[in-house]
Amino acid sequence: MAEQLACGTGRRKTSVARVYLNQGAGRITVNGRELAEYFPNRVHAYICQQPLAVTDSAEKYDIVVTVTGGGLSGQAGAIRHGVSRALVTADETNSSTLKANGFLTRDPRMVERKKYGQPGARKKFQFSKR
Image (cartoon, rainbow, N blue to C red; front, top):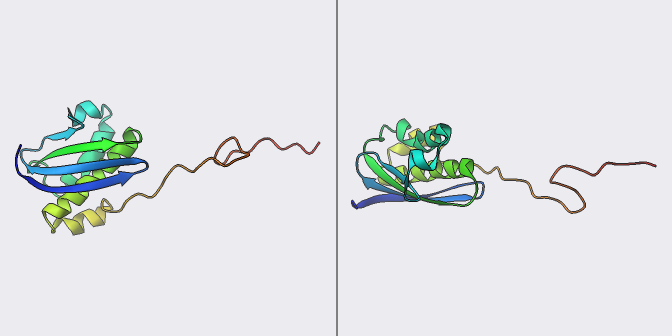
């Protein structure tokens, strides 16, 4: 494997992605599988590649990702966040472009917890006066 240039940690919902940037030709490996194989939905694959497209560095780096927790949508968001952070670590000039596109900001939206005495987070049991 090539010399490691940078690493970044991305988070979204309950997913955590560890991203390692290496010099290369643009291969992205997620949990030991190719990106298109891991994310059959092309929208998720596109989300992961957005920071590379914005910074014109898609063909410069090979990316190895280890992602855990959550579903595919949260994992794709976590990978995007991690790739963005790793690109800033590798080259500081990418910071302004990535920040302008909102890729360096962690998305704080989480699933609301279920409350006791209720069937769900927001749903209430039917009220009956009599």
